[in-house]
Image (tube, rainbow, N blue to C red; front, side, top):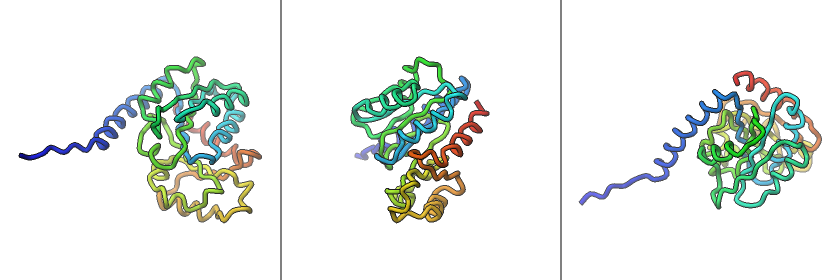
Length: 219
């Protein structure tokens, strides 16, 4: 007797991709720009998002969705430092957000935002596998992690629409070469924009916000 084998992961990913495309089109029709920010833990996602909000708060109605396995530390920090609406999404142990989780979070936003930033669960592996329905994916690579991460975690950088290199104020303390990082990113994803920044000092953040403003013209 032949045994039927089902590739469950492939089926789940395909179903999610279809759902994500539906969500993406719906948000575009509603004029909502949805950005998915991914990185490893400790790269400075929250600090970068705070810097971005402070520069864009006069141009957009901004809300943030914080995805974590547990805690509400980041959502509280966003609210306290920017005043923007922030909600926490607990993934129940899952290391990523998918399209339906995004949809659930978006339904809970009360401020009628036209820019929503998702801080995805912190790791460089599974968040890249699941389409959240976002218009663009931003990957943050921090200087202490090393400039070789695009080579070690190819899918994350292949899925990126832009890469932020954070903590450049500390570059002299680490073996990190920005041009080498650019080359490694290019090997994975052609000529996507790369923004060297310091969320701590604000250096380079204006270039990211200018990029976001250009994106918003389509919404």
